[in-house]
Image 1 (cartoon, rainbow, N blue to C red):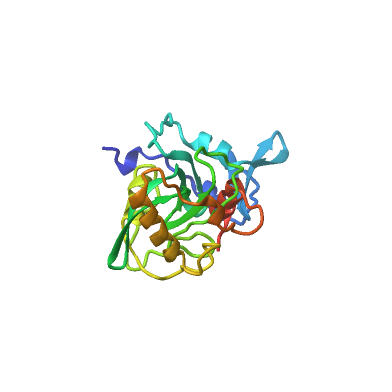
Image 2 (cartoon, rainbow, N blue to C red):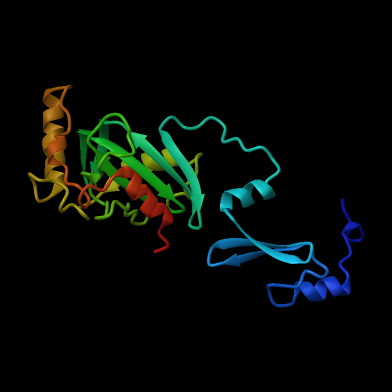
Length: 241
């Protein structure tokens, strides 16, 4: 174990310069890194000239991380992963399929459209899309489910979701889709019905008659005009609200 005597000794002159107001003269320092409104400025001397160089977060990350990066094998449905000032974020795509939904005391077995599921820190969003293959330019629609707010944010009620990560995103999706839904946020998600639960009940009846029934994507309602998956992900991962 390294003792305190093995640590480099900082001279009094160096310490006084460290605690002085930035930018410093660099009389006893090799360089300094300044944080200015989420911008990164490297200040160093080139001879007698003071140089100020703007750096990106990617350059800093590579400079401070000497270990090789490896995500390991990604979960099947993960299509994008990153980090921001809000925390790590993950985007998943789930093609159209049938789900067992518990809506209050009633259990339904229904076909649902394809979903984009986004987790960032402890916030999660779900949007419906009309295609079975993912494309970042697909237009997003209100998920035809209760307990999803107008912008797609999941209302968890008294459930505490895990912080979003590559290792938890898929289990969080199944935790959400397998939870008990109520009648909150059921308006404005179906063209045919005022309450989207009525559409789900209709699809449940049709699914019992035919195994080939599909959710009517023509009934989906867009979130704003022509908002794409790429634009929505960009907004929720960069927003500080």
